[in-house]
Image (cartoon, rainbow, N blue to C red):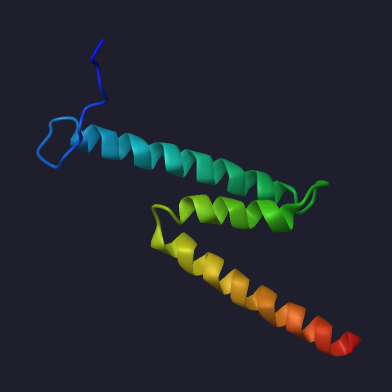
Amino acid sequence: MNWKWPDLHRDHPLHLPYRWMKRIVITLTGCTVLAVGLAMTVLPGPAFIVIPAGLAILGLEFAWARHTLQAIRKRGALIVEAARSKLS
């Protein structure tokens, strides 16, 4: 059997459906993980780990998620520095 996955170049007829399916899967997965993380803010669970994971997944396709994740990282770094200065 010499079957291989199709090489999906821009001119290939399956390029557009593959790209859209990839985007749909990433969006659904990221939204689900983000929703679970948001639910964990009131339910028991590590929301501070799951929410950035959901944003990282969504960041594969959406710039707003990448920018939000960067803002959360910067704010987290400031909080860590403030805590370290108070402990010292």
